[in-house]
Length: 143
Image (cartoon, rainbow, N blue to C red; front, side, top):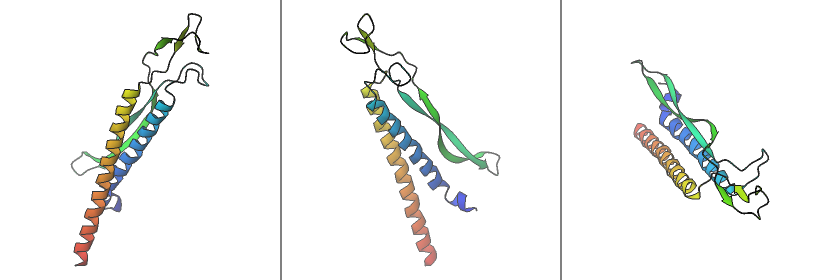
């Protein structure tokens, strides 16, 4: 048994911690930009999402792939329609008085933030349990 396979559960939990941390950062960025109507690229801010993918470790004895955790495959812009509101006094209003707003929905972002937070806590608990079990196993070997 290699050292990496002995720490497999800890590696998987660590990959989940990193992925969920990034997801919380992206949600926070979405919330921070919820009213930005003019970005450096031009146009309103588009909310972003994190895309995860499964990581598989080497091939097991039965030909199946072992578990390896999760990694971030990338960040994608949400291509949903940008809402338009009537605000003729706004600096970014068009000739008809409408402003194209970011496609950020605060209730959706809060649900995403809570989900990411709970997943982060679950991964943290797995890591803590693994360490506690490892300490118990070492204590048993010491006699």
